[in-house]
Image 1 (cartoon, rainbow, N blue to C red):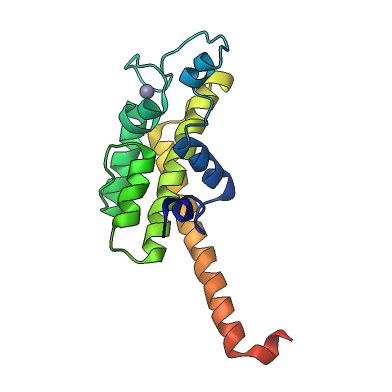
Image 2: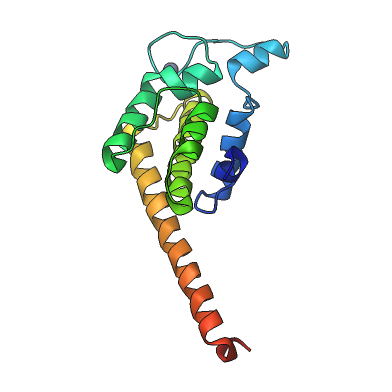
Length: 170
Ligand SMILES: [Zn+2]
């Protein structure tokens, strides 16, 4: 199972998979990227914390206090250590763990939720002046991942019962 499989895993919501893919490939339109594209930017620092760090991928998804709080709560909830390194490296760590494929997919779904809500919190604060707190984001991620696991298990059960009773599906 490679990083690409983890990004496009079966548990994550499709929109979250896409944002994770953009984050891994540094394609999100962060302030740093806008500057590189010669697009004028009013405020170059991160709007989610008080660190006054330039809004770059590494800050948003590694060192930002907002993201660190979400990561810490996720680690407490799952008992799984998520290292404070770039998103691609975190996925590498998950990829190399001796976990079952399903467990790796669940952890990847949590990571995609974390990245998605960090990006959404950033956008809502910038463009709507609405704050999403880390605890709000954590509650959403937990709810969504648990719901997706239930759907996934139900689908698996259905597939198994269909192969067991082929005549029922004619
Ligand atoms: Zn920040």
